[in-house]
Amino acid sequence: MALQITASPNLITPALDRGIKNNIARKSGNKHVHGDTYKQRTTWKKVCDFVGSTRAVNVVGKAHFESKQYSEAAILRKDYQATQKSEVLGRDLTDKEYDDAVWNSTGVQSRLMREDYIRYSPNYYSKENGTTSRNLWARRFSKLSHCLHGLCEMNAAPTGMTYNVMRNAGTSGVDEKSTKNKILMFGLLGFIGVATTELLTAIRGLSSNSATFLGQGILGLLVAFPVASSALGFLGFCAGLASQIAVQKHKVNPKQKEDLSKDVSENLQKILSQLKSIKDKPELIQVMAKAMQGKHHVLKKIGPGSVDAQGIPTILNSSLAAIDPVKSDMENMQALRNALGQYMQVEKPSAESATLWARYRYAKAITTKESHYVALASTVDHMEIANPHAKAMKDARRQTEEIAAPALHNFVLRTLAYPATLLDRVANTQIAPTLRKWASESYQKEQIKKMSDPDRASKNCFKGEYMAKNIHQYGPVTRACIKIAEGMRLFNMNVVLASNANLSRIFNNIALLAHNAVGTSPASRSMCNSLGRFFGGAVLAIIFGTFIPIAADATGGPSTVSTNGNFPVNFSMTNIGILMFLLSAPTLLVQGLAHVAARVEGWNGNIAKTVPNGVPAFQFSR
Image (cartoon, rainbow, N blue to C red; front, side, top):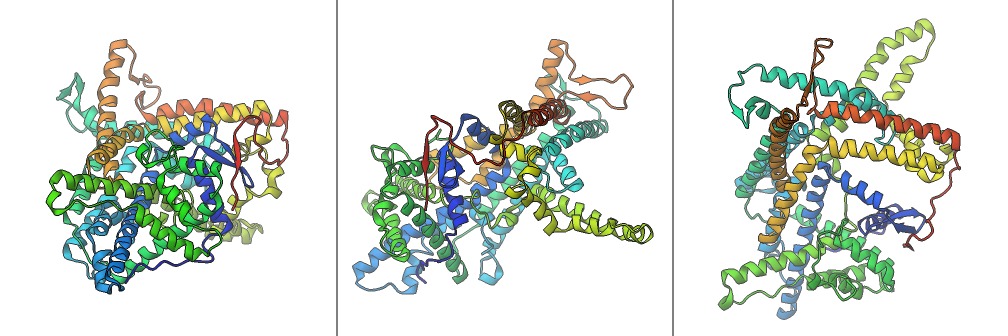
């Protein structure tokens, strides 16, 4: 079956189009203001984005979308070759000839066999699809690696996970920017910190502490959550490696061909919708070019040899040249199909000159060309726009925090409604119906929508969540307090609480860069993340278990504060929960000052955002 390109009349909705444009703006260093107006993001917003991107959900999302897009790139590249072969032969290729040239070719198969694709794509490795025994084991090892990834995330941030579970189980719909969240942080994190300290102390007390490392007891180093996350990260990497050893080429079944054709068609249609918006508009073409280079623009996704004098990627210029706004979407999508396939062609070395070095350079060149397609596709196909497989990709930590904890909250409310029914009959109250209403999904969704309902702005204007999201509607003192409180919250949650994640991120990026610099295939984000967790957890365990106590001893300051028997616990100053408790106090104080300032300065009304004087802005419409 040949690649089937189809255009859906209902795919590009106004909401999807706006989401894509917002993503392009975000990746290019801009943000949506209102309507079709966009402006340059402030340095503060860029820092917030960078700090917030440490979370594992971003790694999983990138792995899923990139693996899908690399498969699309290989299909378009091989499809163009099949078209050229058909023209040379002067006839259409048979189904078998096309399958061998495209679906079952080495180029496409190598992308379908990548660990990220096996792990996060729909399950095509099943007995129903005639999969070989080795590929069944590859899928099992990949699922095991994903399971270990979730357990690793749970141990990498036990304080944050415990807090999120307690918060989501105790109350529903708490926005991280809300005042309620800051109150809960202050009230719960100290207890969580003490509990984890006492748990580790009890475990260490079960064994004698005879061995030492750099003068410190070895148990203090080994019995720690970072060590557990490090070990699980290594085991997850090994399971992923086993999956890659086991996997082998398989004939693409009709269902997978249909799904892959649908993926290619949808992304071509999304790309076309944005190309039509920017064609013959130099300013918007520059915005798109910046978006393709990556959000932080530190390491360019497309090298200087593949851009023109104005910095516009060649693949973008080729795509713009291929389309004609006057023609139908189907005609333009076919033109895009050919233009992108032609762009990704690389001259293959002849049999006489096919040395090992020549084959290596050929494989590297193909991956580079396909990465340019991924850079283009990621502007329109991204987790920030829509993620239909988000629930299926959740790891054990996300399932616990975002599914199990809210389910427990609703279950408790529904259970309490039964005895409340008796009270309602006796006291003529309405407690049971209220509890069932609170536990209903429709009610919870309705409550979330109320915060963004413009008709309720006057009722929401003094709520912390609304204030943080509509900061432009308040006076200068209120705005300053909101920014300080949010900055402190971001620092607490994404720097202090995410110390393991930030260390792991360094090693994760090193692994990605090393593989992309030397390897001939795209680096696996999930595998590199496991390696990052392994090294990051190990380094953090050494820092907490060795260097901090050494520094404390050298300066005469205690790493553990004794309560001299006034409380049954001691407070370890290396415990993240206790440190977070201490840092959440000033955060809550500044948030309270923001509320006071808002009452004093007043609310300016539900006014729309405007572009400040001197800030670069542009219009981005359909």
